[in-house]
Length: 165
Image (cartoon, rainbow, N blue to C red; front, side, top):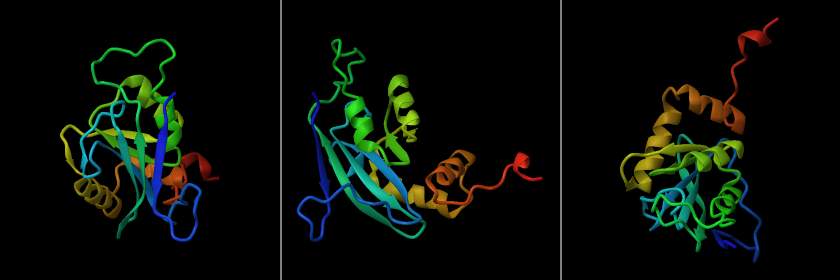
């Protein structure tokens, strides 16, 4: 069984619930081994840095740490050895997930949890990922991001042609 440690910034509560998303923010998770860089495949990521990102700022919400991760060998684990579902469950509430690589079954699980996986071809700093996300929000976001923003309640969904009467 996989264990997950949830590290959150708390002010006055000993055991705070999962942090509420900042109004108008996009919740972004980044696969990392060192909490400084996007440098991990989804299955082998020991940590995920979770941020609320708006056009103006970003804020670290929590860091998720996992003990039981895949080894990037390309081989499947033993029967009943599910390392992906606990990660997907821990990431629920995120809108985007940035990682170096992700397999098809893992991506499908994320999409069904309403988390949009984004594969980044090269390692980069977490700050670079957050700055690029802000730039996408400030400029004309691509259609896939507009859909995510609408589903997240961050941006108004434009009425479709069928909605007009």
